[in-house]
Image (cartoon, rainbow, N blue to C red; front, top):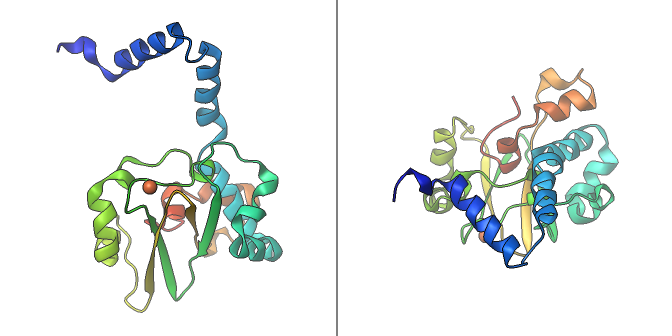
Length: 191
Ligand code: FE
């Protein structure tokens, strides 16, 4: 095929067809796109992390039952029937994968990055986590244990990263802004 078969054009053709067939109305699709662009994304997870750093009660609830703890936020995006938050400490570093496919806490982190769905990441992070994390640019001290959490359709995991010292004096908004998606998957630290 020629250059007319770009993904954008194909998506547009598919959209036209689905609207024409009455599968959905154009406004419904616009609403979904707006949701993922503006309301679903790693900023939701980051807000929760920043709050957990400052509110010990909330942190305790989050680690005990994250599904219940985040209910009040009414995050959209689905795919989080049961959320489990695992805490990074001086002794343990956590990292999340879905070995089977690409289960991911959409409502907390938005859409998964491409590498998360890569068969190489999915198999290697289990077998040689220290090495894979090194390839992400993250050196985990030998004294630290690495725990790998395998997400599924039923349970989605998110990492509560450690707060770097430089954020001690920052406010919650600045703290949340510092929390990147990769830190909540566990392949990076909060810088
Ligand atoms: Fe999956």
